[in-house]
Length: 528
Ligand code: ADP
Image (cartoon, rainbow, N blue to C red):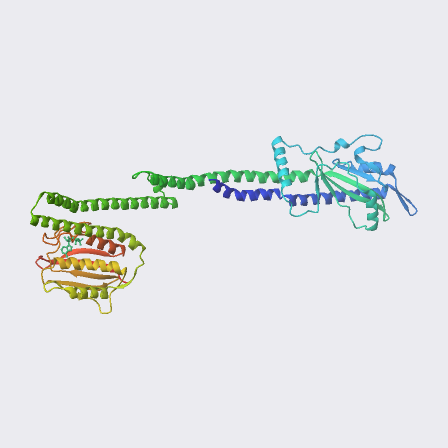
């Protein structure tokens, strides 16, 4: 929430900064003000130079008695301006604020209108603005320096210095003087020399309060502030909305995940309201829920497997226990020998069971890590056949292999594929009648390599075509060597083939009349 708000507020902060950089605009306004005031001062200076001097040969002298009423009259139409006339020696000759006579008369000082009055709120905003602006760096030093406070209203120009300069360089202008009084009034003062026949006889100082500058700036500031406030409200609302629709749901998901981690059993599921959303949050919620379900399935499978293993181990163990009990009671050496051989078989069975179990539990993890490679099933099956041929007794079944000469390539893990086909061929051998034939055929069909293992045995009992792939499912004739079959062979084979993105299925071979001719196992693997 905080971050969202921060990111959203950033543009606003920029806007605010821009507002505070209104300096440039203010300078432009002030320059206009100065230009107008200077024009006025020039008119005054011209009038004074014409009518209030006495030309005495080469000497030009300003006559105060003439200058005072003239200045009074000149300033009358603009009461908000104050004009002051200085003599060449720096003394004040006339001051429009003091009236006609310097010894009293009507004091027009009160005519300088008071500073702009504003309501307390606006004044506070203005004050804040000024403080904020004082904190900001001012990047471009302007040609106009605004002095804050401090400077008194009675600024005196350096008249003598100015006189010297203006006689030396007539084109030069005295810089304007702009200051803000303690009562927050912006005063602009310009000085112009009063010249007659290229002689400077005095300096006229014209001061006016630049109220328009302030009020124009203030109006702009207010409208930007209004916009800013509106944008701020929108930003807060937007952030709030974003936090409601994004941040909070994510927190709820995190909460659900934490509950799943800490809770026992299947507590803490993803809230339904999040699952039905059709956006990224919905997708995330769904993914979380799905992975939780997948994990639970896996845990269930592990639990079931552990229970199955315990159950399977119990049988040979109880058989061993009862054999030991009986062994203690009987004396007959033949019987005892028999019991001992039963115990030995049980131990073999346990041994076989445990190695199969550890194999089964390893297969998944191992296959998820293993990198698949290109495996030639044709040569692998040929090797299996050669091994069988080498160890084959007279009445043992024969393997007939039909695979493409150029090889039969799949993507897989060689050792595990050997395990699958050894298991299928082993089962076929054990179910084959004496001298029976086992046919192994391989071919590429579309994108898959298909390998079929057929035998001439009794086939698979009806309705058990899927069940035989279950763990610990083993259904064999009694006389078969006890303890050799854990019922994990096909289950492991299916696990391997599934992990390699293939399929393994079982069916019965039948003749046209429907009689079972034997079993058929079909393995399909992605051709490589
Ligand atoms: P196991 O070989 O230890 O019994 P498997 O998982 O390899 O375990 O086989 C499970 C069961 O499937 C066997 O006990 C048997 O009943 C049945 N089965 C497997 N192969 C054949 C086959 N070729 N013909 C008939 N039944 C078979």
